[in-house]
Length: 317
Image (cartoon, rainbow, N blue to C red; front, side, top):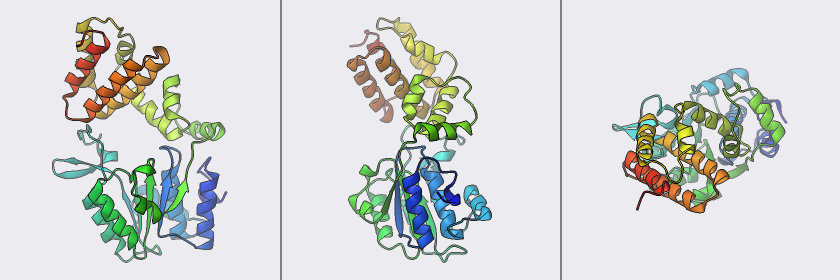
């Protein structure tokens, strides 16, 4: 492993491929980084861009600028929410109080910006460089626009990052060199987590199962877990199959008042796993999947939770 990629753990095949491309200066016009969330794809993209700009050994000054997001020849694009006529990056949505009921998307305006950026003259790099995160989060129009950009990237380079490459057009696949990232083995996972702040409480079996070998995912799940109001999880877990209807309704009220849409969906996923580990009743999981579909649509969240909790308590129709 080269010094440039020294902090990218557990991804030797990807590192070997990227380091060889930098060393031989045989760079593709587009790459597709695939693999689970939180296993190092974003870090690999940063280090690879550093190598493209500064050479195979990298350069600390370039690294600092890339990590700060202020290099003039790099455009980093992530899915956005549409809020009051403005596109808000997913990473800023919570801070800006954006409604996160529907998932963020890469939009046509963003892909057009990518095309304009690639047409610029670079300042320091060999060409302009673009990273697209969650590239599968596109509707048909931006996907077709991206395909045209991939067909004529000029002297620039695109790095596409995707956890669900099967959702991409096959023609997008064919125009990219694919770099695969896998889940980390136990040793590498432990090394990554050792550098992170320790959890406030021990990780539950459900959190570890949800992470499935991804340190980034485990850190994100810890954050979600720690943000839950005290007592809410206990009330969910203690909701029996013959619960008091007033408790079911109160729980739906408190849950929707305390949690935004994204937190509700995360809690639902956790609850499904916890119930399966204890009850193993497929009908319960199927009802929760219906609840998920309602939360992702335009059903009023509190009503969706009320009906689901009442039905799970054996009180609904």
